[in-house]
Amino acid sequence: MESFKTILFFLICSTMLCWVNGEVHRHQFVIQATPVKRLCNTHMAITVNGMFPGPTLEVKNGDTLEIEVVNKARYNATIHWHGVRQMRTGWADGPEFVTQCPIRPGGSYTYRFTIEGQEGTLWWHAHSSWLRATVYGALIIRPREGESYPFPKPKRETAIVLGEWWDANPMDVVRQATITGAAPNNSDAYTINGQPGDLYNCSSKDTTIVPIDVGETNLLRVINAALNQPLFFTVANHKFTVVGADAAYLKPFTTSVIILGPGQTTDVLIQGNQPPARYYMAARAYQSAQNAPFDNTTTTAILEYKSAPCPAKKGINGPKPIMPFLPAYNDTNTVTAFSQSLKSPRKVEVPTEIDESLFFTVGLGLNNCPPNFPSSRCQGPNGTRFTASMNNVSFVFPQNFSLLQAHQQGIPGVFTTDFPGTPPLKFDYTGNVSRSLYQPVPGTKLYKLKYGSKVQIVLQDTSIVTPENHPIHLHGYDFYIVAEGFGNFDPKTDTSKFNLVDPPQRNTVGVPVNGWAVIRFVADNPGVWIMHCHLDVHITWGLAMAFVVENGLGELQSLQAPPPDLPIC
Image 1 (cartoon, rainbow, N blue to C red):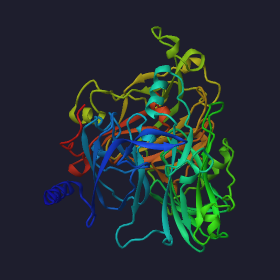
Image 2 (cartoon, rainbow, N blue to C red):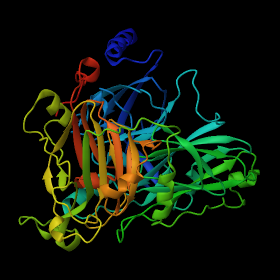
Image 3 (cartoon, rainbow, N blue to C red):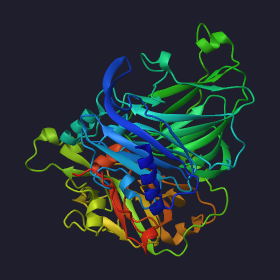
Image 4 (cartoon, rainbow, N blue to C red):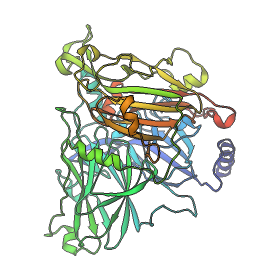
């Protein structure tokens, strides 16, 4: 059987231009209900292989992954490999009804893809309803054999996966919100590597402990896997040297706090240069939407010096760990200062001659209560139902085919390609917006890109309902963030702020609250790629769109054929 798999791999590899010497990593992910006790209560949480968080995958640049996902849960499921470029392997990208139909309960599907030219920290998560509340894990990509990090090799490495926990079934939470039209209930805790930490009830004894010692340099791979909340992260009395984000290296800089939107990763070096003791690592919300309720709790882990005195280590009669200073929940200045510090290590090839200049508004909305709905189904502000949109289109996922299937097989009636490249109506995006603009149009509209076209997108926040920092994630691509700012984007004055020399490369951009961000990329990966807000409450409401990137010339610029085990709807 193994030899058959090897032959099959070489057949697949010959069509994928696998890197020489790249290893093949085979795993099985069993999605299943598992009793998980947090905050004094036990819930049947959906997990992978009974683990929460799920398994950490460790590979090298150039390696291939084959992961058989077996769904033994009672919900539809898919897995998305967040930030993996998926060159020509769109069938392995994972978003439900976009690149595949879901893996039904009792079904299975094998994801096959190669890591090409990426190093650093990514992650994987469910991309079906709110399953990713508990179905997620780290994906660590080290340099190829014989190559090294562009910084001194750290003594040890630790994945720090920030999460969000409901003292309820998250699937019930989103189902309830979908019925009522109101905002879903906030989470009850944040977590670090699955544990809420000392500041929550029934949580102290399982608090995550991260070892360090005097004179060591450690690499922390920080991932924000929370569903709906950007998070500040810091460690008491220690500074971070930021060296990477979203599996791309950065010009190193020093800071005492980092900010991550859901979906984002940040690699930081931390020095063991403090008196041996225990220090809290802590994360809490950055809340940019005014007057919106949010989970204002704080999750902690403990940075523990191995040479700290024993009573302190065991916490027996020892002093409590030192608590760090955390920014205020609405500290946009700290967020801005951090994002403006991110730079690529050297001059990069930013697309300059732009073929597609796009302008997308992003934000919330309110639908009037449909005449046939009882008031119990319209519990949003003033008897409305919450919605969200890009360029006034609220994205509707198909139910009978995936978008990629419909595109590749030419199935009519599943989507249209008339997503507007600019807002249908120009208005004062960040000012007082007329209530007549609160109701977007539902639709499954995609935007077509020619292979190799150079794309610029201005992402503009709007103050409809409330302005907010939106983490916008583009599947299948990395992009350069060439500028960001506040207010309405003005091409006459704001283009002078563009950094076309060393902008950071990312897969998820935090569009500033009441502001804008400009991204650029080359459309060199054929397929259907969703771009959406990584606050799951917003994608549930329709804050998404998708690109159809056409095939180029020949096999190496074309989408591969779908695998034989692709789930059918």
